Amino acid sequence: MKRLIICLLIIMSVLTGCGKTIEKEAINIGINQLVEFDALDQCRDGFIQALEDNGYTDGKNIKIDYQNAQGEMNIAQTISKKFASDKKDLIFAIATPSAQASYNTTKDIPILISAVTDPVKAGIVESMDKPGTNVSGTSDYLPVEKQLDLMKKLLPNIKKIGVLYNTSEVNSEVQVDELKNAAVDYEIITMGITSTNEVNNAINSLVKKIDVLFVPTDNLVVSSLPIIVRSTLQEKIPIIASEQGSVENGALATAGINYYKLGYETGKMAVEILKGAEISNMPLKISEETDIFINEDTLKALGIPAPSIENIIYVKTKQN
Image 1: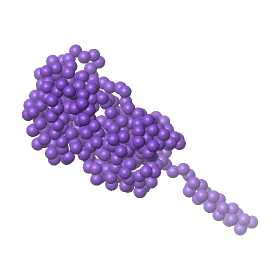
Image 2: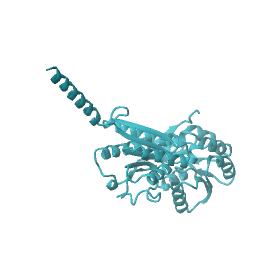
Image 3: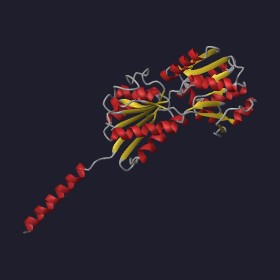
Image 4: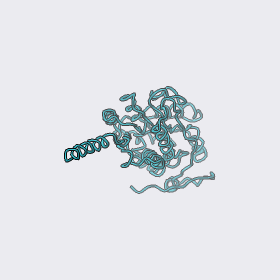
């Protein structure tokens, strides 16, 4: 009888051990974000909130590994390789360089992207309607005509539009080309840079040649906005930006999209994938909503009268 009890205890112990090994592990999600600034941070926050609203909570049934590439492509690539090596269940890549680094590293793990202006030209999907790869997500593409229309209303006498952009970012080149094609009545003066070290000299040179500065959704330029705003305000040159965070950091205005909502939409797509949706057939989405943001402090500093435009959202410059 004693031997029977011991055998039963051993069997129960083995079964209990087996039960532990077959318990479902948390879903592992890697977030590869190019750099920290408002728009990309809002994307990340929206993505995580959408997961949580649909029952996926970090530390419970999912594990989120957030990594910041500090604006460096080589770091974005290192992060991507680590995520692939760790066999993440899903990767969320924020901004074009991070999306490209992730796609170049793995063709097996589902990759959702956001804050990528043109995923097709970036070489990570075949088309917006049917990606045909392991990539889908949301684009922050916004027709440049919206910013031009805002320029005309705020600054009717401008003739020369300057653009500072990173020549290494595909999304920036796309926006510069669109501006040149759309702004036929203006002189477009561009200046390309490749690192933050070049920003100060570049903007100091550019402001002497232009009437207004257009800032595209360029990660390097937007993250360097405090330096740029200092030079433009000194020369009384207004900045028309492409997203709300830039206006809050001193740009004059934008007709921009809501990056939190963009990230939230991407998070909803993540939920679909985690439930079994095939990413290669999942169309990429573009935000249709735009809001006009104007910086009150910059408006006064430049001596520009308040415009008679409906539904303006006024903001003040953040104190860094």
